[in-house]
Length: 129
Image (cartoon, rainbow, N blue to C red; front, side, top):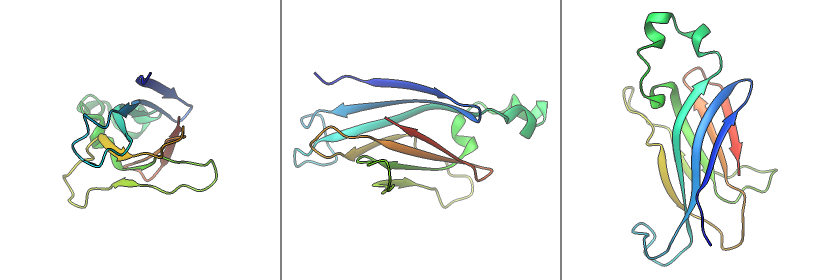
């Protein structure tokens, strides 16, 4: 039975709150060919040193985690050695933000999904599930 995999990853460098869940082929409107899909939903992101990087008056102004993120990359078939992103979300416009919700084709067998988040300071954070 398919189930949502909630994951809050807290490291010494960041807190990333995301969900990875299979999407039934019937629900899928993107693939249309009955391919297995996976949905990655990033719900929150906070670098551990946010307080140090932003003065107090700016820290309280951060209400949307996406303002802290330059890009998101997702590999739905991560083998633990080579990262091959199938979805890349690096908005080109200065004021544009990442989407945060992604539906992507996944291999038929059980797989590891890797998500790489790059913050506005150029640091990378990884979550694999």
